[in-house]
Length: 77
Image 1 (tube, rainbow, N blue to C red):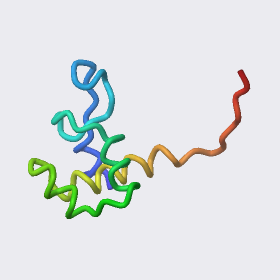
Image 2 (cartoon, rainbow, N blue to C red; image 1 turned 45 degrees about the vertical axis):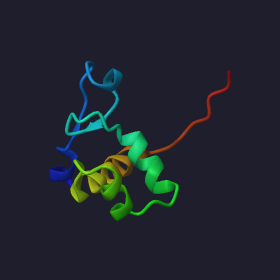
Image 3 (cartoon, one colour; image 1 turned 180 degrees about the vertical axis):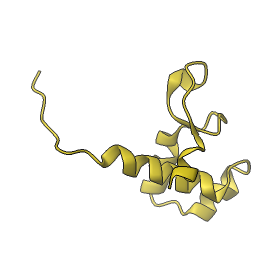
Image 4 (spheres, rainbow, N blue to C red; image 1 turned 90 degrees about the vertical axis):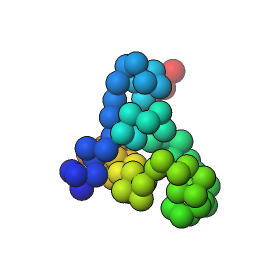
């Protein structure tokens, strides 16, 4: 999984510091939204030709890492 996570870059000069794929200005968030909306990996790759299958797997790996928390607490405002 760590080799996939190397594809995720964070740079304050690119997309306001959001995690992106290989500095290409494709936010991880957007790719996760596409996949969660039901688009297949092949459909996404057809629409975004400069992405690679490993990039989408990296987005999923990144989301997996973010969800690995010990506990979640609610915050009241």
